[in-house]
Length: 530
Image (cartoon, rainbow, N blue to C red; front, side, top):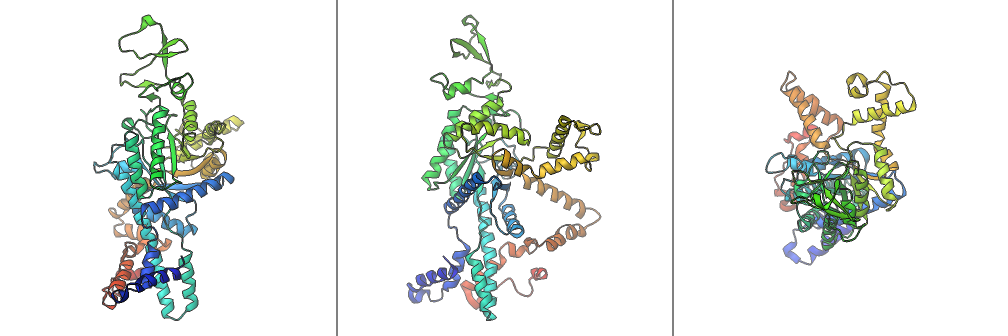
């Protein structure tokens, strides 16, 4: 509805209640409705799922239309990211939020900082989704509230042209609410536990849930050692559980991102159930590292696999885990991905040990031989040393091409002495274009950085502490923070406004009229910032 239609709708509702509602201003009610477009998390999930589906279809026709997100660990951080995007780029098109299980563990658990091993409270995941959307909805209300105050000024000045232009801005307003890809880790238990948590996440607003094929109680960060995967049927049961959660709640377009850790996972806790040679369980077991034995070699407690008449004893570690054969990671990744897409997943996530377009493309091309439309969500991880990795990639490419690299030590390319070299410049250019290159060549639909705001918070706090507690004193804050906020037009310089003070004043006027005691008077020090 247009703004004027919202006013008329509110007027109709008020008029049906007679004199008892005579002091309710229909336009004020319309403004509050416009400022609170999304009534529930399910409204958000349905709205954002449609955005993601549209973006996925557009990517299929043009790989330059890839999407991006940054991981955010607090509602305020997510809000400021979206405010910045609208300020710098004019719209939020193809820009999402990512909710990182790693950051919830490290920053949001009541136990205190934890490693990324699914030890944090599972409800903290849905809690952060709700928090992020609360802050994004508040950003809408704040920005629209500013428009309504401008509208009142234009009307008071008798400027109908300006007033009409502002109403048109309200009608065409783009919300700060964008899709969140939310990390459910390995599902926090069995398939029923996964289903229950997925429902909570969807009810909070999640339209896309990412789940990984690790064992829940052995789950590790994708960039750490000791990862243990589960047989495909176990993982597929959880994918189905998430799909049922979406369907039960009426989010029919909900997106499932199936992550495989098989490239770096050399262990399994279970030998898969198999009924016929070549079935999915048999394929999983075929990667196990086994010794062929004779019946006379059987020992107490041995677990034996019968394959084509041969007795195979999987190698079992003291931890009671079984290990896969070395150099089978790529094959296992491809099977994981094909199987997930054939059983209800929408997007893939392949956790790799380095950001290498060629490596990713090789796996995606194999997957696409079976599932032509396969697309990836990819972790542009802070766990990668991007500078060193790309400098080494350039070094290797130059060496292969016959370029003289005698001036460079491959093992020392991170050294600051190389920062101004031609090799470093080419590496930086490859980093700059990595996302576009990988979207074009390796099927990556969505690029995200899992933990960027964890690192930016640490870096900015370090810089402020160094200056403020050092010789710069108060100038450390004024020059390094406040003056930069003013120069760069950071809305938070007016922190009272950002926290909702002006919206509170609007509501006081709605509720109490001339008797309202407002905060935004002449003595409000925020007026110093204009």
